Image (cartoon, rainbow, N blue to C red; front, side, top):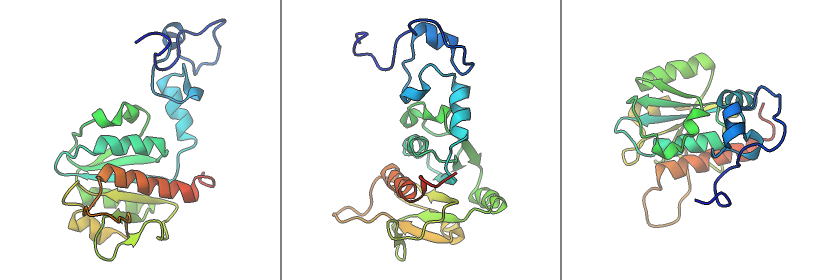
Length: 205
């Protein structure tokens, strides 16, 4: 790839900034990371600290009983919509390829079981919003979403476990109009996160 077409920016031109958020290696060599312009040349730790000052008060949880390949994409979307954290339930290992390195900037936590997640949510005073296209689910664009909550997603195929569904205070779905029974789990997660930010992002603190 030519310098003209390369992603990001090259080495810093001129006197280096004295701001400690800037990374000397990136200033010297250029910053080719997939970050927004305001974070060019910043240290990873400085970016995370800045994001932590602005994160939205919703969390994303995903059940991971079958090593779901959607998790990486969901983490990437959670970073884009500035979720407070991502909670992976079940298997600890997950395919990070779809995250496109965004897991470095996003808090990703693990719970061995759905009970562990629910205990944590209760301690935090966070209601569970189950996302699955099951009978009785409310279209997410019409639902009364809580501002502080955990958006809980299931596996591609089997969906949410019985324990997860039983613990939720609200069940929502993404409205569909075509022939397929369901859409990709990562796509559904992005839609639901966007719906949350559409309503609350301007006032979330």
